[in-house]
Image 1 (cartoon, rainbow, N blue to C red):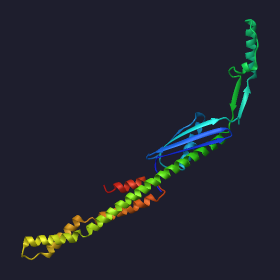
Image 2: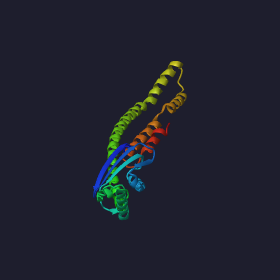
Image 3: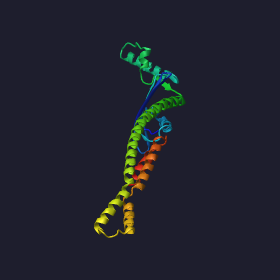
Length: 254
């Protein structure tokens, strides 16, 4: 079954407060060209994403958009820079004393100062990779399904057109079958009119018929066209890429 080059697929995945969204669009292209737009933190997965898509899609200009929200606390640790916090407190109290200010310092205030609180992210990259590839696989399957549906419609339309062409070929073939016999009768009548009472040279007449038959015969073309139609039908039922072969059948006699 042929597949359309145009399609769209999307999928979402949520695991342990990690949320992934993937969208894949494809249009016609001579080769497989995959472009991935992904958050910078996950850019190391770009090649793995391309490899996953290429297992299901062999041709087309593919645009991939991935979004990622991480609300999980897995692998995350909050660190307090105690020494730096003490320095902030020390300097603030010193300032308050020098300027005769109230030194009413709250821990919440200290926590807002730069580098007092930091979040260390020690997520398992392999887990993220597996989850990303899972959502990409689902989106790719959705894309392929759409391309197959569109390809089925194209195939059905082509089959109708092939049947119409085959019908016309058969009509032409049937019409051309009696052309030679009809020509012999007309040629003989014409010769009789020209020669009147003289005897017709049957050998010369036969020679003229052979020359005419050679010039006007379309049997070879009809046979070739029927062969093309048959092979075209076979291509519509195959799972292989057929674009190049179809173009070959359309252009090799030009």
